[in-house]
Figure 1: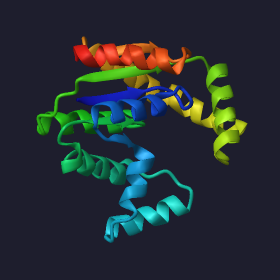
Figure 2: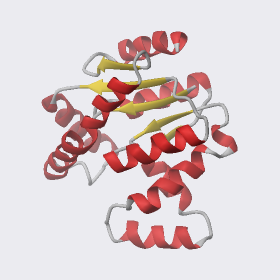
Figure 3: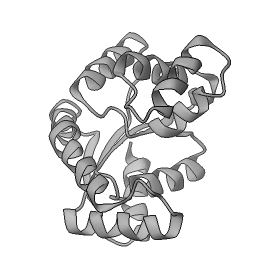
Figure 4: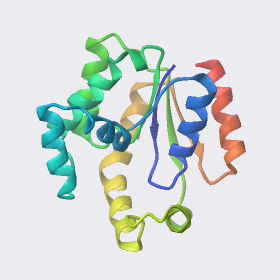
Length: 190
């Protein structure tokens, strides 16, 4: 099973990805986790990545794309994967689609988590209290949401138009168990 999850920060896609991953035994690949995992490698790319991440800068597509695709081709992903937080922009989307075609990897499902900004903001603020996440303050939340709505959300529209029958939107403001149940039904038909 090969899935891509779209949705703004705080929409619950990470929570659902973890539930799906456990249920059907495939890896949940968030870009943050992939990058942190790559830092453990003892190679030139890991050193370059460490410098970028420790400076607080975003990892450029020229570095991120090969790291993600290396992970997708790993034995860990031979039975499937859940991409969470990738692709985030048009360049990454173009790269990923080209990669999938070249490697004859067929996506089973693309899920777009829909939630209003107030709900998302409140969830992120609550998460920051529970997890002590310093990156979850109001200013950072506002910036992350702006980036999502200008760069990432339009990709969901592209996938909706080009992956008919595999793309569906889910009301992410529902209870976690209700969302999980809806996703399970889709997985059974994918």
